[in-house]
Length: 165
Image (cartoon, rainbow, N blue to C red):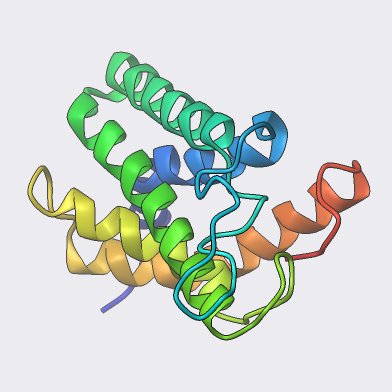
């Protein structure tokens, strides 16, 4: 099976709202933490101070808005844009919860999980609305880690992120 440029384009169009939802909290985050500074039964933060309502809702808004724009350009499913965005953000929150249980500080690296958490959440929540073709899933999983590393490096250079991941 060969992968064409059109296959890559289609896969990236499919997942683009999730990419945008995941990036938006870096730019528009801040404010009150989702976990309100509370700790879990292990005494560690539930999510940490870096996961905020403002970042979550801006991420959801931006990702969904990208879904609307893709609808105007490519007949994209608007509900899919919302579900991908929500899934991306929930996937990131789940990874933060797991990292806190592992006693890892916010911003500390957890390779592979740092690059694919939001993608797995997005893909799972997309299933009831518009399941992606298997080829698209494979492409997304392959291209996301380098895209994620490059965009995080750029965000770090611009002073938007303290860590490189």
